[in-house]
Length: 459
Ligand code: GDP
Ligand code: IMO
Ligand code: MG
Image (cartoon, rainbow, N blue to C red; front, top):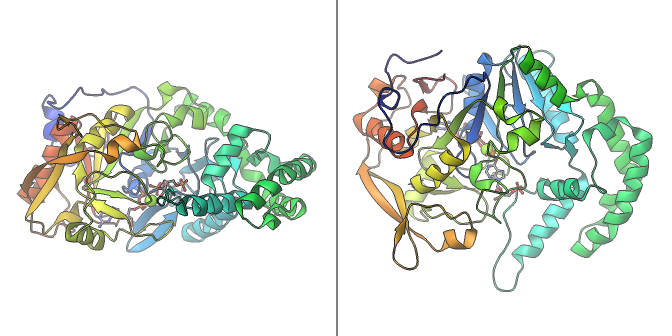
């Protein structure tokens, strides 16, 4: 166990804010974002990875952008698991992921260069392939939604083809799986059939139907298949065998809980189960193997793309957070919407995921504010205040946040490495989060670099 010498008050005292979620005998851990993404999951995965045998992506695709910074050098991963920079830790892309072959091939090359050796990456034969026509469809559907006569109704997707690829998975007859890349004859027949079905749909959406050229796609896919052949396997069986042999897995959630297809702010969500609910179906492991849950949150809130965001500050406070936190998307470069911490939404996410421990990221960004506000309730249209999180977008649009204001801290904290050295205002803020969410803070991040971290407890 890696611990700071300072014991967390939340570990030594009973929780007042909710039921402890309890420890588990399973040796695996899930890292999951508790807000609308970009909480710093990549940094947490990189930090925890050396204690595990494999890092496993179970959902999403190249819509994710996970950043790891080591000695000032930045590495951004979209499909590649974020533990890849540790020799001896296997990377696994499990069946629940949608894989863009072009993206993973370039990430393999970059990671091999960074490692100075071969990357130990395996990809599920059951994972689905993101095709060029998925990206075209994503783009066109967004364009159509944005041009609605009453208002822009686009989701603000990353345009990485995620929704259309998962739609085809559900349609079945128009889906291509990673295993198909290894069967050129079957794939040829399949792509001809798919392109015939897709061409009129893409034309109707206004896309260039040339993206549905079966023979060009076949060539691209078989080429990718040749390059990936040695990595494609039945990862479900492999992961079960690893667990049977006493192996430890680190599950890397992509996107985040409030973007979960079923439990997020629908319809402004992504197309997979990003919460821990996605792990069993996205890996082929029984739910009891999920293990400990490490929830990751920013010390404030951000969102990129459309959808309700009760604590958003479209003013100088939001601008200050955006500038200090460099809040621009890792995948698309879009400016992120910024606002105060929302404890109502977080409590919902903590409960849904059964979070055991919190990693509070980007605390350094809040230095210099005289006061910090946290949302502790939502006022609804009838004037009453609730601490229930309505996942439906229209209900959430209608609430007004109720804030509690606490003293801030002036000191820059990027050089702080222990809990005790944090300014009192910062400690109080963290204790408030622990107390209201009923979960201890195990990790505090005070800068993007691997070293800029306060570890209290990660067991
Ligand atoms: P992810 O998608 O959850 O992995 O998060 P992203 O990588 O998309 O976004 C998090 C951003 O914050 C990245 O640029 C990180 O390098 C950066 N970051 C992570 N932790 C900290 C921190 O404690 N302080 C600051 N200032 N930046 C951080
Ligand atoms: P990481 O893993 C932030 C958002 C998009 C959009 C919605 C749907 O880096 O935290 P999609 O392209 O998935 O169909 O877009 O979901 N979104 C993310 N926002 N971080 C992410 O991933 C995201 N993945 C998807 O901005 O609002
Ligand atoms: Mg990100």
